Image 1 (cartoon, chains in turn cyan, brown):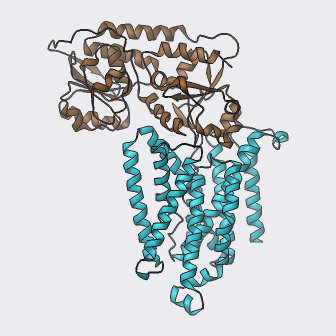
Image 2: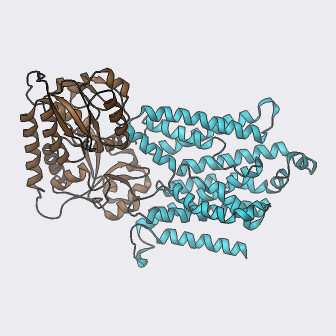
Length: 313
Length: 305
């Protein structure tokens, strides 16, 4: 019943995302209009994939580091991606895909450094080391980003920041195709680790006694979740709150077991981002609001409403 | 992306600028008369200036250009990093950024007048300069009428009344003449200054004013702010005849790299390669050369391929 509601909700949001927009496309033309086919449909699909990826990455990382505050960007990825993007702008890197590729490279770099830090001295991705490493790498990247931005012309700075706030305006079928090829593997790895994550949440010692190969699970989950996030950030910039709030909403409604939790987080993340993007596109039309602002405006009140239930476990 | 990135720089210049013709005849060096003049600047502050001002620091590219157009370029002792026009301005000492000025560097030049662009950021600097005993005036400089008004004001403060008046009169006459239409439907233009997310020039901006005077129609003229993030869908739906972009070198321009991105193909003008390359030098900020900008834009709008 819950599943039916969630899937219906997502499909309804998807239909609305295609039907609604800053320009009025008459209903009979909806299936022929290039505005719908070339802009709204790929944008809706991209929103679904990005929101879903952030939801799953957030849920997995929260369990991995056993910290309810963890979100996909906590471990330094947003800092790395931002640094990549700002460097691409500052260096005037050519080509239509320079920005997303540079952001992806930056995220991978941060991911690599944090991962390496997590293994220092045989620490085997100790959650505390990961969190501290992520914060440190993020802060370092942030400092370099700010240094670049402070030396750049003011309008370049503004544009870089606009990109960092996140948005789906760069959506195209090419982007959707790339994500459709990329996302299934890390998603499959995370879904496959659902049972082990149930154990890891209990603590690493108990998980080991219960037969989980904790070290291997942690590596797999960390890498898969980070790769999902890196793709999301390359496609749509840093969209906050989806990866933080959606897993908690899903837990509040579905409980903490990962086999239902991860797919739920995907569907709910996709739906939340789609809904936010519809508002971002239409409330101030023809102007557009950064979608990350809307995800916060929608997500935080939902979060507060469910806080009571959430604190119960 | 390079062009888009680089010339998005002009977006700010739109908000911050004026420029000037370097072809103005030079006057002799101004002599201090010991007189002072009290003005109310555009932030409503009262500023007392010893006239004529002989050591001026200009903290906006547009104001630097206007000063050179008034023929008092040799009274300018400091400029921002972004003051590139006219070429003679490059010889003036660079004090860094104009919106977030380095007050110490400005004060070190011992100016007798500092000119700042009006923004929340510059008020603090103006107050600090005032406390150091340096007269600092904040100027609004966003549209042709601002250039005209400022030309008279600065002419009076720098001992170039006649030149200030002549610059102002020429601008006023262009404004009074109104749009120079060629009949028929005005060509429709969208100024795209950034691609992800798409940022366009709205109404109330200098470029919107120029487009109107050149007999064109800015398709985002209904957007109140000088520039705005808009959805790509709106650009496609408003279907401009031209996409205007500001470039370094208008003669050897090629379409911006974002125009090759698949999602932009929904916009007819992008698909058909209908780009207007406007020299950032001439169009980048409010300028005493606005009449030339209007004529140039009008010619480009009418030479449809």
